Image (cartoon, rainbow over all chains, first blue to last red; front, side, top):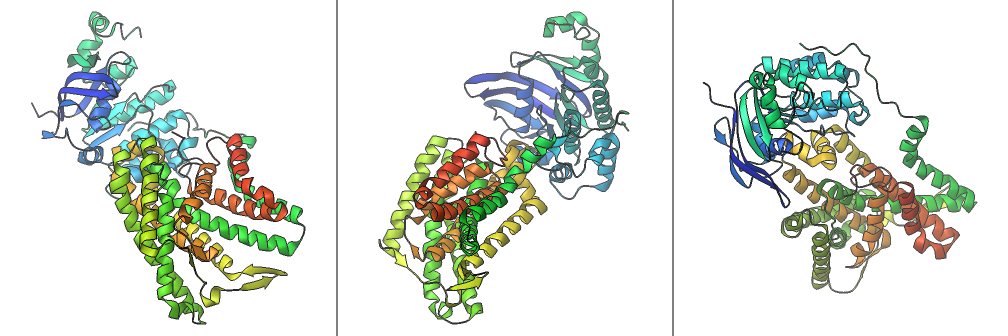
Length: 240
Length: 343
């Protein structure tokens, strides 16, 4: 079995006086989609923000490609190959779509071939290329947010609730784009509340509760086991 | 490859009122100029006051532009910015006094060269001072507004005292270079040559700043950083370095503004920067935190209004800028063109 792309061991993270992550142990396999699931407020977003470095770990270790990145600053983690799509999308609303994408290519000019494939996945970005990103609809902003993470070669994508609040047609576009990314060999750690999307995309899954990982295994196993879902998350995902 | 759904993408449409409202700040300067013309009555007086107001506005913009970026990008309230204005004035004017052979010569080229040398000296000195100020005074208090106010005011006082130690406690009077003295007459109005130069200089700087901010990658990083610094870092950029660069550039611009203001007033004092900070903060606040365009429009409004009101009703000139700030904040509590929300 190949070395995991990311390993979190005993991660503790505080936000102000709150002890949010209380010893997260998580292994993200190389290639494929790992779903990070759990009820609201259990620490999923904090886990992603800790991995990218927006929150500093109080203790524990983070290994990316086998290298310890625990004390590395956010820009260095990004340059090491971690892409981040935050829950609020992080769009620079006063910049145009083009400017957002130019910024996303931190190491040099945008690769035309890569841009073509992004346009094929998200045609509205081509249509509104010169428009201010703040004027895009919610779905288009989410497309831009994911496209920005795809503007450069990344080994691991951290994506936080990409389908939140989107219309079904846009959700299918998002899911399609993430499936393409997966087929190209990328590793994705995905926080997602939409069970249909989680079931369709997830290869492995980890469930959080109270700032810890309480279950980890194959997504198919979780998806087909209503009692397990009920025990771990207090609900059946099919019914959700 | 995934394809987009079969729906036609829609652009979020702004209503007519929203569209006009968004551009309204751009119309304020022409509206004020026309209003000034109607109230003043005399074309020559209006023209003189307008050029004077524009020149004053440009110099305030030069001093405020750096501060608004520091405010917006770094969330730092830097009262020490006033010290950079004073130091810039003293260094620049010292350079001009040392180049009296050039400033006294009846040659436009030599005169402008002397001013440029003074400007470069002032910008280098205040840029270096800004670098030290950021590392020693500001860096330990990032994210703590109250502490920022206390330590930067402390820094301002210390630097003002150092100016008095180095250059003496008395104000220094100066005369402008030979070819920048006097006025030109246009449409019956006497317009000081130096004020015209200040307008041209300020405009050129505004255009240059816009080009850098809009057309270069570093400009993109700065604009994006003002909106969402965390996301800029998540894309791989070291925002800490950008912070320092912007702080140094903002300090250098304050120094440039100090030289220009010193030449405008023909006298410099250690406390001149502190006095200017009231106008500079008004401009930054009414322009909208982090907005260079907002600061530009705000500075022109402040300059023009002060000159018009001083002519029409001198007693009201003292409160005209506070009244302007109050009116604008009642209309737009975040300022005219905010890039970041007030924190």
